[in-house]
Image 1: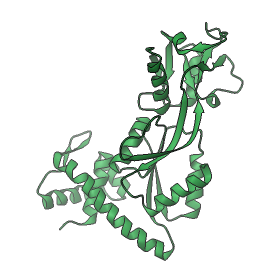
Image 2: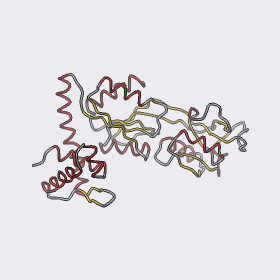
Image 3: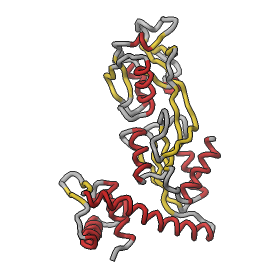
Image 4: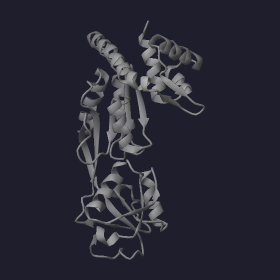
Length: 296
């Protein structure tokens, strides 16, 4: 007989792609997770997971079950939310996706304020190594409830993004560069230059790539970083140019020059994203209300 526990354990393994991490997430021993998964596979008469020494992958049957398992868990969550609201207290878990660096928002302070008001809600903060693209995929597949993302342009189908902040990106040059004293810099002037930037999938990388594509200029990214604050240091050492928000450049700007790139759309947005097709839990709605209040 299928039980909610079967779906909860299956979902943990499917999302973590690892039995050890799934067991830690569920606060049970690994053998207990394996036993429940085997019971679920016997009940359904199909293998759901392919196990290797390094990773766990979903079979076709597992892929088919995944959205239905999430729907079953969501239905139980909604029932609990309804009872909890009557009882006057929020419970549950909110899975919050964030970037490796979100300097425009004080995420720890925001989540701390939420925890003080709703101490019985568990917050899970998840960073995607693939930037905003990975976070948006997490919202689409139901593994995230809320995410702070930088996603220029229209949001993917099934998602909703409310922009809460933006900054214009500026060109960062080393002192002595041929363009350091130029009265105006345009993207065409940057052809052939090596750049320091984030990997594909990060919002600021997308903004810059689109600006260069619109100008018909190919760009060489020589160094990829995931810490936005380190970009200026690589530029100072002469390893490339960068297009960064000015607030991450040291105030003294020693060894660096900032330039506005004329005629280019280099507006870097930051927003809060949710699913447009799945109703957020009561706890997630409370967090979204707090974001509206604190961030605007």
